[in-house]
Amino acid sequence: MTPRKWQTSEEIFRLFHAIGRASLLYDIQDSHSGNIAMRWRSPEGEEMVVITATGSQKGDLEPNHLCYLSPAETDFGYYKASSETDIHVKILSLPGAQASMHAHVKELVMATLDDQPTPKQPGPFVPVDQLAFYHLGAEIPVDWFAVPSGSPEMAKVIPARLAEHPLTIIYGHGAMTRGRTLKEAFFNLCLANNAGYIVRLLERQWLALERDRENQSGKKVSVAEKVKNRLEEMRAKIKADPGSYFHFKPAPYNVDIDGRCDFPEEDEILKEFRKAGNRLFESRLSPFHTGSMSVRGVDYLLYAPQAAMPYEVGGPLLRLPLALEAGDDFELALHKKIYAGGDFQTIIHAYVPEAEAHAHFVYPGEERKIERIIPVDAEGSFAYLVIPVVGPDVSDEELIKLLHDYNVVVVRGGGVWAVGSQSLSEVLHHPSSLREICLYRIAAVERGLDLRKMEPEKARRW
Image (cartoon, rainbow, N blue to C red; front, side, top):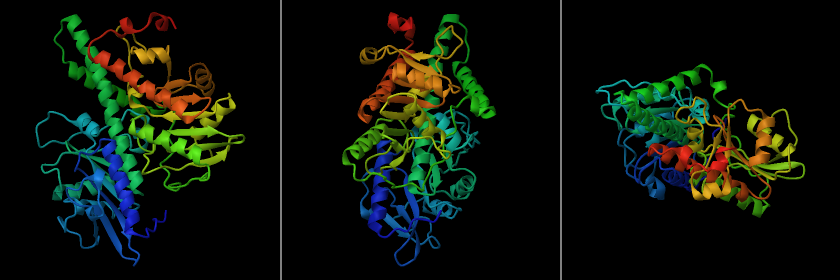
């Protein structure tokens, strides 16, 4: 793809400011951590690297926090640029790499910590969720460095890793990634952090259950080792047959539709899309530029294929035929099939991490993963008797039938689908409520409480 020709440094600043603020909102940076870089051709035709200044607040960047450097002459510590400038310059020399980012993806860092002696050679991180597995790969490299910030060893290893992978992990520190655009680089980091969070949610549930079993049996067993083995078994099965664990393979991140809006004159519906998209992102209902949402028209649908979009960054908004077409990807086609199968007016598909992790829950004494999520909190119980959970092999027909009956369905390994009869705001309430319902249930498990005793009797008879 031909790199975008930036016209002014003001345009670059607005992009850096928006991505910096979004990374702070998504909690993958602290107030001053990380760095952002991209290749840029000045109006005079000079090739440059633009990078954030060392110690700058990524959530509150000012124009003087951006450094414009020559990629051929940039050295470690040049001017006030990041101490990792030389690493970014090498990354940006890779084919197709127009942007790079480093972030303190806390959930992923926590999920990859170990207690092995140093120096160490950590194994790769294996995602267990659909998004990271397909977008970032079945194995994401993890490297330990004696000096994990701006060291010559990092300058050698990290670009080599990113020549083969879209993202790489610095043990105990964070991750670095490359992208064709800055938005794609940020997308990678959000998926990576989300992947770590899902693994940690699974571990937290399993640890609580294993400790409960240990207390009942009186046996002295390594609870942590049991959970580790369980996670590794799950990872091995996913790598051997991802199609049996994931509902579908997401379409690749599309940089060609960046900034596209097919209905700029429709102010009210644009406002609805932007409000819902911002809430999906800020409320952690789906990682940046994941999921999808649509509004039905007479013979068309208004469609956001990168639904989780903070206000300052935005995302593409398309007007497409309502009828199925040969080039439709799985997600778009399913929107169209859901509309064809009923009188719904709005649809949201989101990747709620708490729902994905809890969809793998197994009640003590049972063998099968749950087939329904029963609220144990007051508001959740008022709104939903149960929320169905289906496996990744669910048919389109069965999913549509369940949406008619329940309005919201969790697909294990495939996200959350929700429908409405009026507005995007109406349907947004479903994934938002579901996240809280799952948080309360997971917390109950962690505290050693018996979910069966907490669930309403009428729901358990469903």
